[in-house]
Amino acid sequence: MLSSDRYSIFSVLAEALKGQTGWKPTWRKAAPKPSYDIVIVGGGGHGLATAYYLAKRYGNANVAVIEKGWIGSGNVGRNTTIVRSNYLLPGNIPFYETSMKLWEGLEQDLNYNAMVSQRGVLNLYHSDGQRDAYARRGNAMHLHGVDAELLDLNGVRAMYPWLNYDNARFPIKGGLLQRRGGTVRHDAVAWGYARGADRLGVDIIENAEVTGFRIDGGKIRGVETTRGFIGANKVGLAVAGNSSRVAAMAGLMLPIESHVLQAFVSEGIKPFIDGVVTFGAGHFYISQSDKGGLVFGGDIDGYNSYAQRGNLPVVEDVLEGGMALMPRIGRVRLLRSWGGIMDMSMDGSPIIDQTPVDGLYFNGGWCYGGFKATPASGLCFAHLIARDEPHEVAKAYRLDRFRTGHMIDEKGMGNQPNLH
Amino acid sequence: MRIKCPYCGERGNDEFSYLGDASVKRPDPSAADASDAFYAFAYERKNVAGPMQELWYHAAGCHAWLVVTRDTRTHEISDVKPAQDVALEQQKTASAP
Image 1 (cartoon, one colour):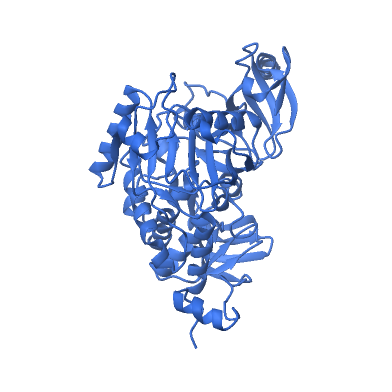
Image 2: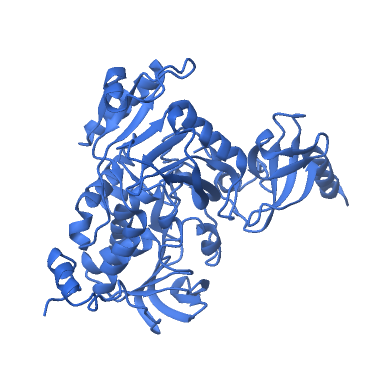
């Protein structure tokens, strides 16, 4: 009998003949054991990817992922699904390019359809100064072996003839295109990593919220949860959005503020945006989902929040950005909007590092760019936890870089998290 | 979210710009631990989940700095005071014998 555990055309056909009775749950509903080698706090994309790579590449499957809600309920199911590696600074580019390469092989690795679609990410520029900045960014990408193309006006016109080219205030002058960028079905990433980790023996424990840490002589012993104490030699935190709250239970104060970022989806319409387009004169990014909905977003609201919902001024600002760029979407109806809570770090870049507590590891500060980082974040965090040394491409993401002056500030905004 | 400015009345939050936690205070540069204190001042934040005092600037109104007490879990605002009054009050408390 064919196993339905490995997804393929043969398992689909075999199940069609068996009345779809052989499918297994995507992951087990695990109950917590008394202890594990490693406990990952946070069952979002990053936590699940960490557990997967710990089991797959670092040979340790005695791992539990504990999640306060259900898998897919946090930011992994709330983002705008964009993946790209068009960064500027040396601390960032190799990391995000590692992530891009993992995205490219993800579905084969996980045996799961995550709908990875390299449809191209186009960042528009609207002035000579902005073109120079994008040329510099593209050159920095080339120096790190990443693809980038600087398009002039005709290049953009050929791709998107229906953009508003008559905007007197913010004329479109061209764009920086990363063809390998694109979108990935966000919640399928969570499900795929959860299934992959589960099949390798990782316990995924849902509805277990951390209420405290057991620390003994500066060494972590385990976590207190709403489903009881779980012992662990090593504990990794992957709880971006709530990093400060969770780290405070271990007595740590972080260089992070929590902010709300809103996202939007329209009613489903016929396909007309086949890539990802961003407006360079405001903050607006858009793509079209395979269901036909326009998926878009803009700036964070700009004030500290844990509320998972934002306010109307930012909604207005995002929609104005959209209308300035592509007036033809003006009569499309908005289906829903929602908010997610971001760890906004003090330099706009993430942290993957050890903490002052022995055996406690921290992964957070993803600002509003965490989704694209999911595979590399998981890989580098798994490397750090397994080997007690940073992964080659995540060496710059140190927790103490603010103290030593090694910030990675892509936007050059300084220590004002709501401006990154 | 609407903020009740003590000078202008209730206005939409788009009239204001946000600085952050109002409890963060510039440390004494001549103190022995000034290096650590300035690191904490510049980078470490309590990132409160609950009622938090924060600095807002009424940019499209009276240009006053305000100390707003707002619950970060619900966005409910319980108190708004001019930052100048709050600073004078704190000065008075600090210099009291």
